[in-house]
Amino acid sequence: MAIVERVFSGVQPTGNLHLGNYLGAIVNFVKLQETHNCIYCVVDLHAITQGIDVWGGPAQLARNTREVTAAFIASGIDPKKHIVFNQSQVTGHTELTWIFNCVARVGWLNRMTQFKEKAGKDRENASVGLYDYPVLMAADILLYRATHVPVGEDQKQHLELSRDIAQKFNNDFGDSIRRHGFNEGLFFPQPEPLITGPATRVMSLRDGTKKMSKSDPSDYSRINLTDDADTIAQKIRKAKTDPEPLPSEEKGLEARPEADNLVGIFAALSARSKADVLGEFGGGQFSSFKNSLVELCVTKLSPVASEMKRLVADPGYVDGVLVDGADRARAIADETMELTRDIVGFIRKH
Ligand code: TRP
Image (cartoon, rainbow, N blue to C red; front, side, top):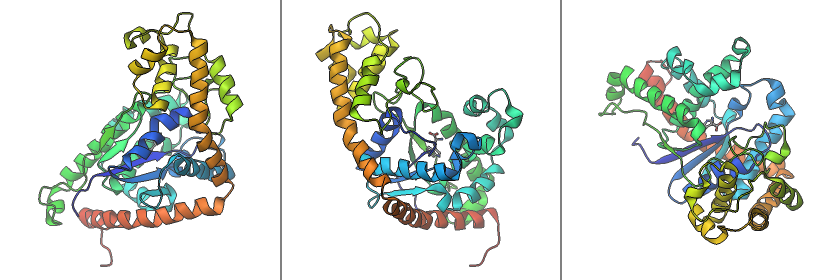
């Protein structure tokens, strides 16, 4: 079993996909299909790590899982050529997490900034799952021995942890790994983050220093993938700007977070550079730039929204995609798990 170039990434089904998820993640996923074997996972096991009031309970979880799947397909991910599935259908994710729990050190997890942020002040009351979240993420990636992981900036630390876990596993079990025919002692690869694109960080429309987020109380802070044309137009027209005209060069966007964000969104949606966009709109007022941005957003997002709507209305089809994807994912995962069990020394039926 040689290490092949393989992409793995996950999106949590925790409601309301927005432009940040689309430009920061999904558009990259679509592109990578041309060059890599891709596995895209709806990470439902991750979704339940926060309180049930956050993930919304069983009916909401199922709805959100189908919605993320629909967004993948509607955006151009091909579930036949690549693999799309929900995490809980492949039990290897949780089994490998347990083994990795015994490789990862408490000191490593204590450094994870996302846990500190999500747990907030009442850390005693956070779930053990939330604490263990990054280990499950390492298991997601390494179960498929994936080499490339498209993620947002905020996931870089988790990816470093995945690399540390892979390395310590390879070290701890080095002799056993070599006895299993991996002469270099490398069983798990070191997964590389892929952070690309001009708008990987899409910011709030109300505050250019905050990330666009589904948990922002103001719906005007984000463009949801399911927003209709009128809503998109309203949100962009109300988006915060500053009194200056748009700069003609990228340097002029420094210290102007809202302008930078809108230009970044325009650039990403039109697959142009920010410099190129400013070449066209620099020196002009925000009002006319916003009109063009509305038009662009509506043109790009409404086909996705209407296809998502169609798919969500056909849960039989969507569930079928996930079951088929899980069957194909499991075939790869089982191979990794059987070898992993042998490497660790667990007795099994041969
Ligand atoms: N933690 C990721 C996020 O919130 C989602 C995720 C779970 C993931 N497992 C993954 C991303 C594996 C990449 C690879 O964005």
